[in-house]
Length: 319
Image (cartoon, helix red, strand yellow):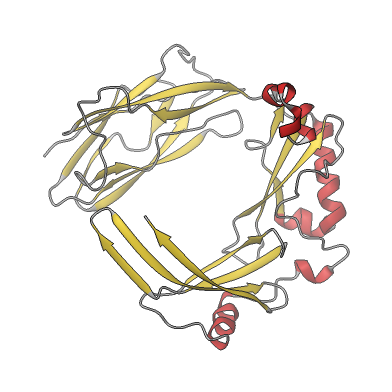
């Protein structure tokens, strides 16, 4: 069996990115390729490139019983791929897409095709302009974080994410109906995003997010996500509880073994807790029939600093 697909992704040099959305109304005679139909799938129908992010990964997966021969055709000259063709048999192939900002891009072209034995799937691309954040705004964001965590933790664990941080003008819909919007959306503002990686917790891959006004003041109305107050509570940035200890704490809290290996995660828990936590989740029941899936279990949430069990909840998935 041979399946080919065409990929063409469009890159706006220096200050542009795009996102792609699958258009199901096009070529309705050909069903979309899904894992349930022929075993072939790709990891994403959207890719983002900017002057801050020049690479992306595309994962080709195949779960069918025969060999799948694949090839990338019609790749624009500004985009290169780590491997242009290959053969899969119940496996995956991870490809690295790299954009070249020196080469010109045809902005009029807006779609590419993924061709399988079932037909064509059409992906359409849209362009967006990214305004780089002024240095004084970045400095203001840095100062705000340092005021909460101190300079050492900031320098060792936190990095500004230029690609995800954004300038936003006043929201036009909110200007027309201000009563149904947060006040800050009526004015220009900056969404500030920082990556946080804690050296002693390799599982940590979290982010910090908050909003500044047009002159760099923090907008209190918008919740600050992922930022502990280590200056006033130094214990919030120590993280003495590791994964093994979290598992032991969950065991002592009575978490049942379940029918599958436990899932252990480390993340920022917002809302009422507002701290970094370990979560240990079991699976007590699981059933899958065709496209229907049902599972449930329990989850123990543990403070990553004190080791305290913050809550024990039940979870349920129906799809």
